[in-house]
Amino acid sequence: MNAHAEEHFAGSNKLFTSVWVVLVVLTLVEILLAYKTMPIHIMLTILLGLSIIKAALIVAYFMHLKFERLSLILTLVPMLVICICLLFVFFPDSFRSSGLRYKFQESAPVAPAPAEEQ
Amino acid sequence: MSTEARAGHFPAVDWNGGTFPYRVGHRKLGMWLFIISDSLTFSALLMGYAYLRASNNWPTPFPFYPSIVFSSVMTFCLLSSSLTMVFGVSASSKGDKSKARLWILATIFFGVAFIVLHLIEWSHLLEEGLRPFYLPEHWAKVFTLADGTPPTALFGATFFAITGLHMFHVATGAVYLLIVAARVKKLKHEDIEISGLYWHFVDLVWMFVFPLIYIMSVDMHGALGH
Image (tube, rainbow over all chains, first blue to last red; front, side):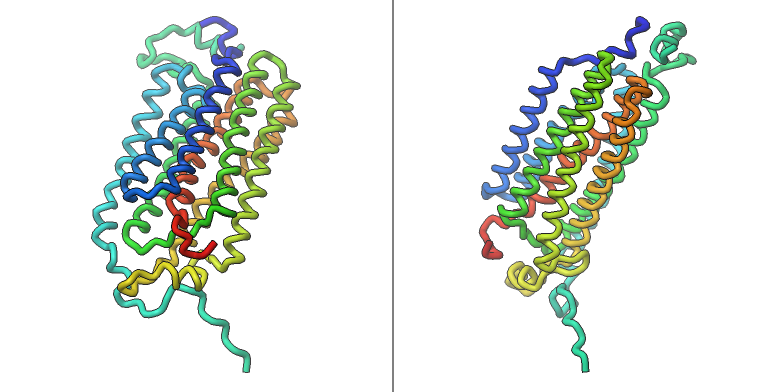
């Protein structure tokens, strides 16, 4: 570590521009996917996969995490991933309650008609 | 003396009482921890959305124009704003603060463009009659299933809550960057880098909101007659 290390910001503008190009291309792929007919779980898997790739590119290059110390990466990333995975614990309940919600509902969920003035 | 330079004077083992185990200043570490907690906020919101979506008859009402066109251009704006931000941080690391200021102003421009486009997109939906707890009447009719299950009104609630919170983050970021741009000559390089971290995080969140909210809810078969 030398005294100038703080001012050093690794990565050239050319590298950042190519990351940006990849991000734009992946976004275009997502928009194309929107108009492909496929089962919803396959679509969801592909879209989330693309999003995770995009997020990883942003974190690694734009947020510069790739050039930080390994100790910082190991502190931040696994903790976040585990916490997000824990949120999946709710999903069995979601599938259970699927279709139960509107059994007793008679009217469509639209705004009630304004009361007529007498 | 800079944090990094001081860190160099304490070459202790990182996990054994090292003074700067991460080799980043405390402000930068603080921003990283804030980003982690904020990403958990958004994860929880998106999980709640996925939960409701899996357990309800969910309408898929977004037409190619205006919704998908607007949201795609908005995505492009945010991605470009991240690029200009990283150019700004890069210029600042070379000591070129005036150039850094120009790049940060360009970032703010893209951020404001995002907000304006998003508000126009919101106004389209509001005009159609979408509200946080009500659907437009023609949506309710079109998306009712054969067995009579109506689409859920929570569509509006999740849509406005998630995109609204994200828009709030963009607006906050624009104000933050405006302050950074005004004081750029007084700030250290690390402080500019920290503001960049926040901005990229806002961009990152949109990378999940855009496919999950917009792409997954496209009106593919023109059910609403757009």
